[in-house]
Length: 326
View 1 (cartoon, rainbow, N blue to C red):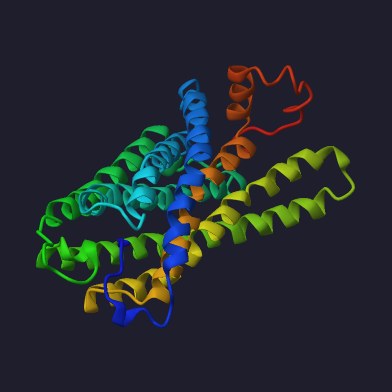
View 2 (cartoon, rainbow, N blue to C red; view 1 turned 180 degrees about the vertical axis):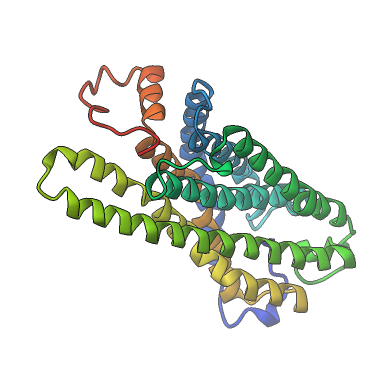
């Protein structure tokens, strides 16, 4: 889990963090309005869609995770202010941050499942596997939610109950019991395992998809009638692009940051600035995910135009688009 304020001047690594401590809250406040608007629009659209494909099932769960993460932005931003109260910081450490990381871990899992679903639809089309069953995909998604809530969010909330009065060092770590510090390290390791497992799965799926798309181009090079189908397959790579931009940099610095945070009960400013900024980049995922829904799912596009009556303004948009199975 990320922390709030570095209270140890001996570990500032020669950096003056005053400007960054002013900028960081602004970054969360800036992305909150567009993120909330986008995800409310997406959620409203999804409420009018039937869960008639595994892609749609995973998409709806991803929307829920993104909306949950978005709602934590104002609290995270306020807690990063230099004059934030101890009460606000304590609430963020104990409740808001666990919810934030719960949503982020769930988003990583769901992007892996969506990538696997795209692989099965494009590379293994025509087959029928258990993971392509609607009931199974719903059960699998809810199982991941329950597992993450029970093993990460709730234990962190329970073990972050210590009085930090007259203590020095990192704020959130001072709120944790000895068990809480151990559990914190375990939760970070679980998050890393989830990420790298999903990363390997996503890379494998898109290597196979890229091979299939290339072969499709070669077979249909002279057939201009397949241009929309080929463009639809290229749009699938949006998932890989969003995943690499938002998550890969952050998870590369998370382990060394957590080791310093736990072992010394403080953080080097340079590493903390990197961790804070890359975590904010990860939070931008909630603004980029709607691109996945819009460009990969014909049903979502159609319902979006129908619900918000934008189609009359752009009557030609949506023609020649492929369905979710593309």
